[in-house]
Image 1: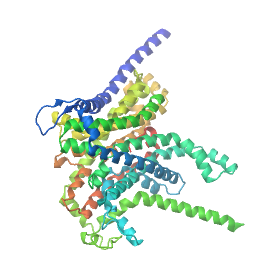
Image 2: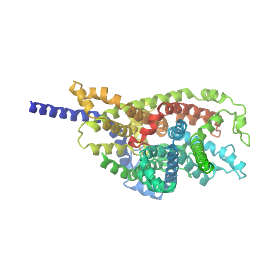
Image 3: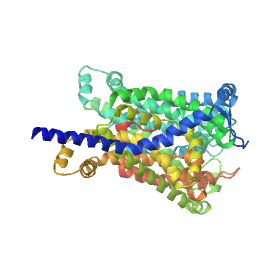
Image 4: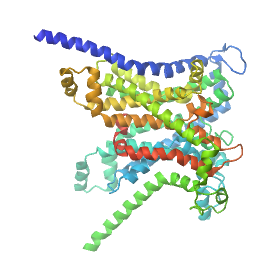
Amino acid sequence: MISARLVNSNSLRRSDRWLGLALVTPAVILLLSLVAYPLGRIFYDSFFSLRLTDQAPGIFIGFENYLYALEDRDVRSAFFVTLALTLITVPGALVLGLLLALAGNINFRWRWPIRLALLLPWVLPMSFTGMIFAWFFHSDYGVVNDLLRRFGYQPVAFLLSPGWAFFTVAVAVTWKTSSFVALILLPGLQTIPQSLYEAADLEGASRWQRFRHITLPLLMPAIVVALIFRTLSAVQTFDIPYAMTQGGPGQATQTLAMLVNTVSMEYLDIGYGSSLAVLLFLMSLIISLPYLKHLRRSV
Amino acid sequence: MSTTKFVPQFSARLLLWAILAIVLINGLFPVIWIFLTSLKTEVELAATPITWLPENASLANYQQAFSQQPLLLFLGNSLAIALLSALLALVISIGAAYAFARLALPKAGLLLVGLIALAMCPPATLQVPLFEMMRALGLLNTWLALILPNAVLSLPVCILVLVAFFKSLPESLEQAAMLDGCSRLGALWRIVLPLSLPGVITAGTLAFVNAWDEFLFALVLNAAPENRTLPVGILFYQGEFTFPWPLISAALIVGIVPLVVLIALSQQRLVGNLTAGGMKG
């Protein structure tokens, strides 16, 4: 009787294993064909001189595309724009997002207006955000210049000067992504036990001390997750500057992802575009490694 | 005594209201401003100093936005593509997540991390190979060319969210169902899925929002006007040197309304569950 049961559960387990493989296979096939294969493809193409304008088959040129990229001014500019956007908007969105999360955690009687205010920027498409902020910062009819005038300052041609254009793109990216950070941090805040704060109150801790010694350390895991995802999306920035400035004026707001698009789809230089795509991929891989390691340990 | 107590309470309340106001202005003002713009005429917009509230509010811009570009078509395309992408992502990730949560997969941890790693790759790196692939398959300029990559890039997020939900359910529920003669898949369909409905809704919303936002693939993989999605379609209001902001604002509001409806339907679930498995920024 017992052995029959064992056999039964053994064969059940074996059928479970087959079922598991069958259930996972569609996801694996789709990711392999639509992500892994394209990645292999850009690695391969990056070693060729391959222009669709030439109509000729590609010529193997080794690392020449990469060597050229090192000297290319457009690449250098796009790299620094991407880097600067990352270094400015990631901390910016983390701080703003943390403040939003702290505010969202306050017990107001009506919670839905707060939820709407937190969720709306998050669901708003990036391209919409770019357009809205382009209108905000419009030289003549923008609300920002209107406020400047009302307070007695000179209006600024925000989108026409390279420095200001970069600044406005950074503002738009920070605004749009801070709600994502807030949504990651909010549940983390809600799991901090109230008893810790009560104990701190008994000890006579100040508001700042409570934040510094209770909230911040306990929120750290969520902050790290937000930091990694936010950095990853900053490196991939495309939609907001594309809709806001088309990368201009000049190349002041052209990111690496935009340059890959321009070189590949407009200049049709597939070989060189692929080598830039590989560089972009490596940048994002380096950033995602700590998260992947953490995930590997937790599953 | 009572006055000293009243002062800190009053200032604390004031602070609360100030925080509330800042959060609301930060989150809602850009959209409200676009809404106000959409009600103004081109003449009023070109006045300096600018007006904040529309002087002669009218819906004429909406009428013109719908007639100048096939806005309804863009809206329909976006809705259909986002819904189908979310559906495809859900169907595939429900199976995969169940396998990861309950069925003994060989090297499950490595496999899951590998899938996530693939999906974290920047969409911009995939555009050229995907373009060539879709052309070879004859899918270029079709809905499917957008649905497939949209769904695939949402898969890992959906899988993470669903694995967390499936794991939180006691395994004894399925075992009881299976002792009663239910198959594994039957138990998944009749017991596990209904109980993890909040997770399914969260995962579906994430996939829908990702697809609704998607811009790069819609720009590169589709050139057919009849299949244009909203984010790309809105670009077509602008001429070479003209930027009809009233029309663009009206079109933006048309694109934002479905999102507000989505938030209204799922806000309570969303705020708590989003983090169940990280997501896109």
